[in-house]
Image (cartoon, rainbow, N blue to C red; front, side):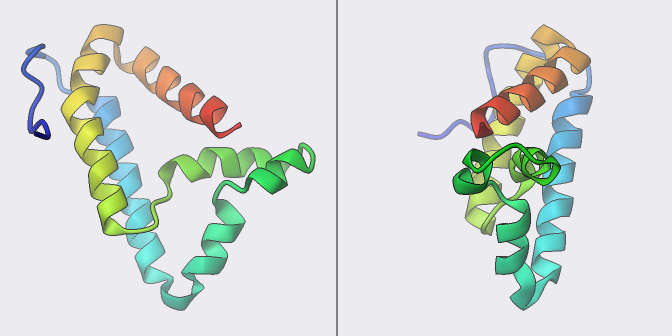
Length: 114
């Protein structure tokens, strides 16, 4: 059974970072949809490519590790990621605070990509 809401922690503050990350993902996905036939080339340029990462450090290679955290290849991928982000992100953000949550989220995505 998939969770709909997190029952463990009742948060009293609004999860700003969680909502902002979800919003960025939705905006980027909407941009991806607007590309039409140019989407595959966009994903190759801005998605994470292990071969490009191993080929040597470059500014574009580092940027793609970051941009790949917000790219989704389809609506099911986006909905699945947002579902778990929104269900569990508010409790984690409440426990860590907005800045720590955002920092750990971005660093985890960066090092996970590397």
